[in-house]
Length: 129
Image 1 (cartoon, one colour):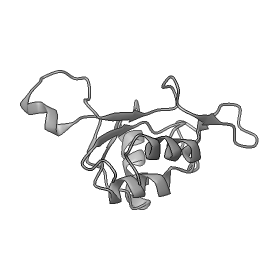
Image 2: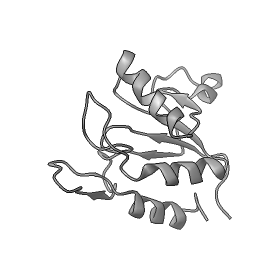
Image 3: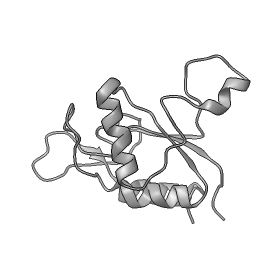
Image 4: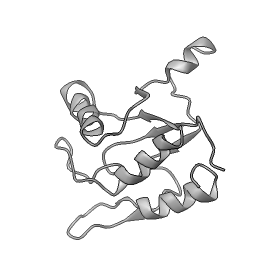
């Protein structure tokens, strides 16, 4: 039985897409896993350093890929119990996190999040069946 209603903060560049900032990189393999999380009732927060038009493009990437976002760079649910600007989530997925599995894509100089191994971790931790 998967954990339901978890809030998951997800980085964008180097995590959901390959590194191409300020452009939008290619899907790093995140789309099916993110859709599976949403299908299990998880709420996704886009947690990104992008701002303005560049952030709008990242939000549009989620929309185009059929992944609904709970929020962008905030957790609206935490406003009732804290005024802290730090985003509260049950889980953070970010290529810069210690322990985030990474892989190199052919020709890339920087690694990106390895969504095959991330999915395996999500199953082990109970976020996915």
